[in-house]
Amino acid sequence: MSLKISNVSKTYRSKYEEKQVLHGVDFEIKPQEFVCILGHSGCGKSTLLNMIAGFIKPDEGQITVNGQPVTGPAKERGVVFQEHALFPWHTVIENIAFGPHLQGMSKKDSLEKAEEYLQLVGLSAARDQYPSQLSGGMQQRVGIARALANEPEILLMDEPFGALDILTRETMRRELLAIWMELRTMVLFITHSISEAVYLADRILVMKDGLVVANEEVQMKRPRDAKNKEFGELVSYLENLLIEETPIISKVEGM
Image (cartoon, rainbow, N blue to C red; front, side, top):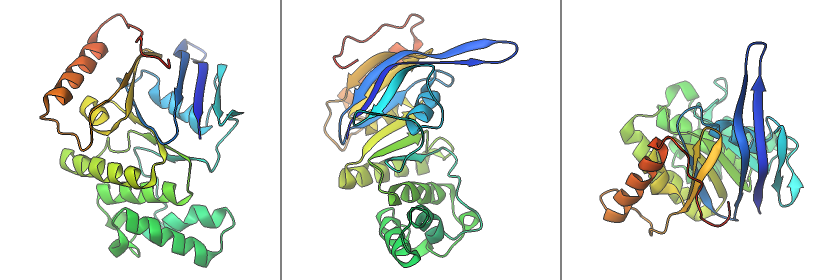
């Protein structure tokens, strides 16, 4: 499974203004790689993820999966948003089984598959509860299980922990990493938290004003400790990149 973004640009136009949100974005993600896209709000990272998901189309350039152009949403690309978007009238297990059943799997088989992923995210005890009965962290875990139940080859995550309190967020990071290390699905994770990106990623793409200004491999072994000197140095380096007024294009290969 390969994902390639080739010279992608996007401009939003209205009656009163025109704003280019992406400028010739170009990179590739390798199979099983966990990549974080880091940047301030409004830098274009969510627009890029929505293009990869197939929800919107670029004005210029092309996005391909295994060499095939992305023309719309597909089962191979699962999406987890900041807001979990669970169906409130369905139980937890029904929410997770919805996708497989929609794709033609029998109700019995889709519920069995949902049970597997519910166990993976540690929520088997909540199978018959409704989303309103769950905490924010539990709701987001159900959202992750629902996306994974479709067995996507690429998992796209748009600031999935952004609405959580700091303690729940740290727990969710650890749990997501454990799930990824078991499944080894390609992950593209959007965040504006530098420490979150350093904790999670194999590689970090830094975006500013619609440009990818850095492409940094994270060499640290997992699990990573925020108190580690190398961790702190990388966080400081990325902070400096984000506050510099003039973007500096990284010399890292693969851009």
